[in-house]
Image (cartoon, rainbow, N blue to C red):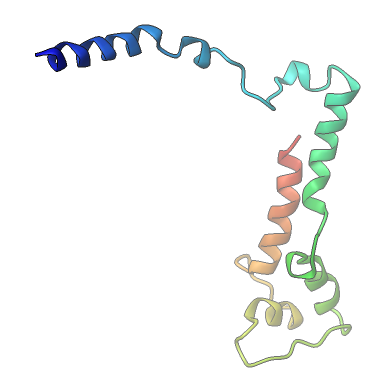
Length: 116
């Protein structure tokens, strides 16, 4: 019989305490458009965020060499036929809109633009 009253009591206490304070907390790391450039620290953070996509930590994450070197005679694409189709098409100046190497480079640049 006691269990019959304990569950509704616990449920009532949980609903009564709720999470009103939790829901009213501002999002951490979020700046409104008015506050973003209000002081030097937030302005510097916003500008630095735009440059993060332009940094490359390793050669595999750097598609810039593909457009810069593969498109010239500096690099010769090796491997089996069809193995690096995106790079081969750049080497042959047959770049289509669906080329993954070109898309990844521009996506990275637009991520930087979108950070502002």
